[in-house]
Amino acid sequence: MITRTLARAGLAAGGAVALGLVLAGPASAHVTIRPDVDTAGSYSKITVRVPNESDTAGTVQVRLDLPADTPIPSVRVQPHAGWTAELTTTRFPEPVQVGDRTLEEAVTAVTWTADPGVRIGPGEFDEFAISVGPLPEAGTYFLPATQTYDDGEVVAWAEETVEGQEEPERPAPSLEVVEATGEDGHGGAPAAENVSDEGGTSTDAAASDGDGADDLARGVGIGGLVVGAAGVGVGAAALRRRNA
Image 1: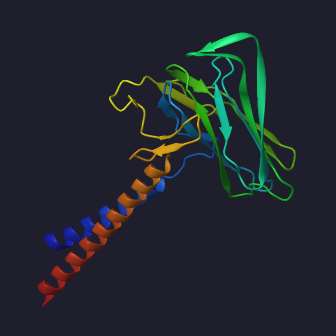
Image 2: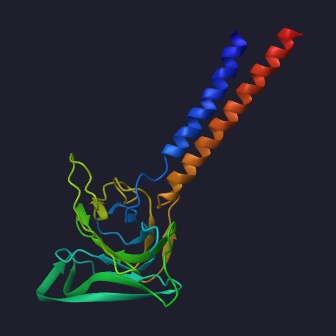
Image 3: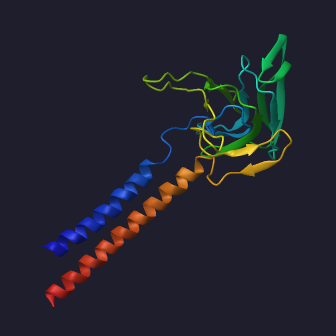
């Protein structure tokens, strides 16, 4: 009886973790940014993840709006094969003080347009990266995105998410900026790849992208399956000894 229970437990453990792995996948196909938490005053590489939601059309243009009330002094685009990036610069009526810098103008949007014959097709996604900094003071900043399809449909990811309320249908990507209070300068933000204004990069020990969480989920899932298989083996061996 005990051996049969062990066998069932092994199967249950493997199945439960495998189910958890499936449930850990993305719940929706929103346009998002990673990291979505970073430190005030730091330089950050922000990756815009764009899933294609249409079953028949392809995405041919993506626009990301940056905060205009709290402009970011430095915005640089990482080249992306098959796509052309355009920076929209806004000149302010009066100079704006950002930290120790006085800005008369700043980049307020980045638009990626696909070259002829290029698109993000049905069932696909793509990622676009920018280097920004120094990040503004602590707070939550919404970065609305606009996704254009080759059939003419335009989808605006621009609705602000309010804490404690149900997520809107088309939420705007958001960036939470936290104060740097820790000795390593990151405070409550996760370790991220910091891109300096001079173009150099340095990568911290922890991964900045949500892919690290995906890898952990896969590892846990595989571990559960191995445990489940081992449980089945133990139970079967015990049954054979008992029947013998």
